[in-house]
Image (cartoon, rainbow, N blue to C red; front, side, top):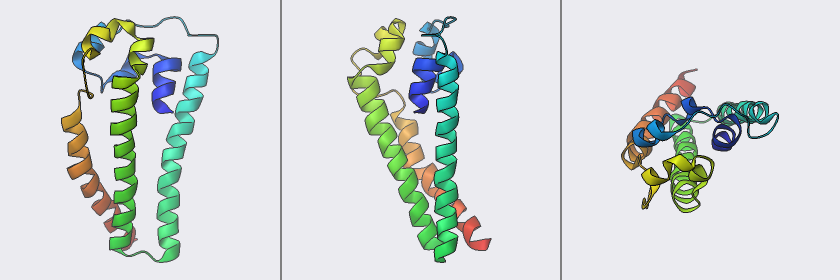
Length: 149
């Protein structure tokens, strides 16, 4: 929902910081809305997305407290949440939407040359770093905090 709101409705270049530098250089600023109220709709969707992500965290922590979770159970829960999120991001958004379905190129045709011939997104190294190092560390830290509270 965040991708949809940023790319389609809000259309502000500042949301594309994870895009390749070559693509960022080619993106033209969009001064006109896609339709009347598109940016407002985009911001509403963005807020709903952020609240949903926060809600997942709150519910998973609250349920863990209610069930008397140990460090291992909290860690496993957080690791599963982060892994499912990152797998969805890597498979559906990066591979399918951006490379196969050409979602971003549809709304920003000026970046076509940058994405041409790509079999996967540009940030595989950072995605794997998050999946294999950062998210397990964040899961451990969050589980530790939850068990000492």
